[in-house]
Image (tube, rainbow, N blue to C red; front, side, top):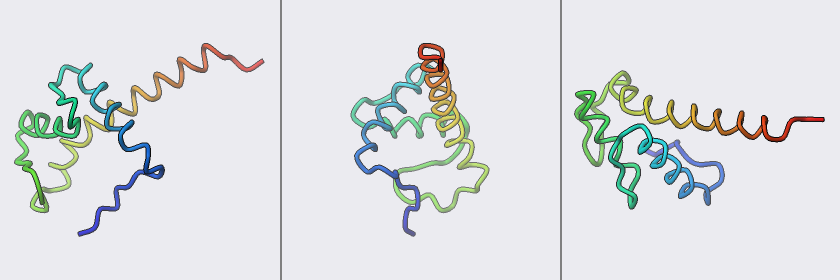
Length: 93
């Protein structure tokens, strides 16, 4: 099955992975700096989801959400916080 989950700007993948690692590290997860995506296995274990490397087509949408939700949700919260911080520094005149 082809992955439809692609970054619009291909060169941004490394920066997004670094951002993910930073955010999840701040949330108290152990993040491998060489592969920040591995944090999903720690979250899966914590949630009781049988996630393994490779194909995981057997997972239900609920199980996948238990793993991806905390990662994506925390990343979005941090992006919003950063955007609000920028707006407060440079108010429109």
